[in-house]
Length: 122
Image 1 (cartoon, one colour):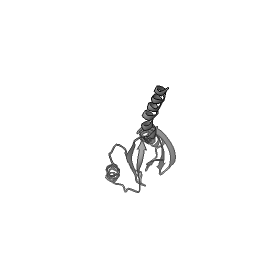
Image 2 (cartoon, rainbow, N blue to C red):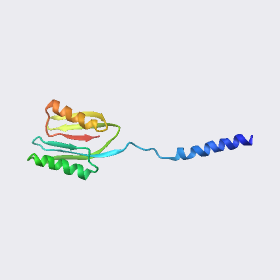
Image 3 (cartoon, one colour):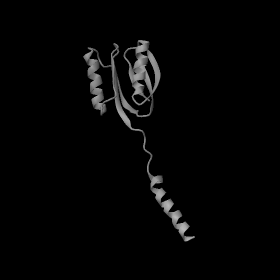
Image 4 (cartoon, rainbow, N blue to C red):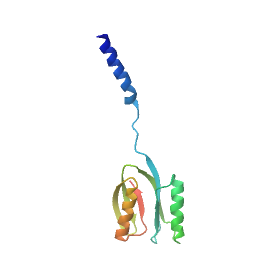
């Protein structure tokens, strides 16, 4: 009898650290999306920070000789993402895992011939 009580307490004691550990969310990564009312846009999702991503995106659009009229920065997850593609011609909801959400949004934008697009992960 003493042996089974000791074994039971050992099992419970070994599970306690597992039960008190916080849940770990999917890693969030920065992105920046920039657009001009005259049609240019650039989206950067491979940079290590918002500052770096937005610097790249802003100067790409400025390099087209266009003004930056809209910009959005945020985070995307390594899991499933839902994004709003907002362009001069309209809006669409886009889904994709990890960085695929950006590829899907750009493909839709290109297929529709839309210009001046912002991708906003929601």
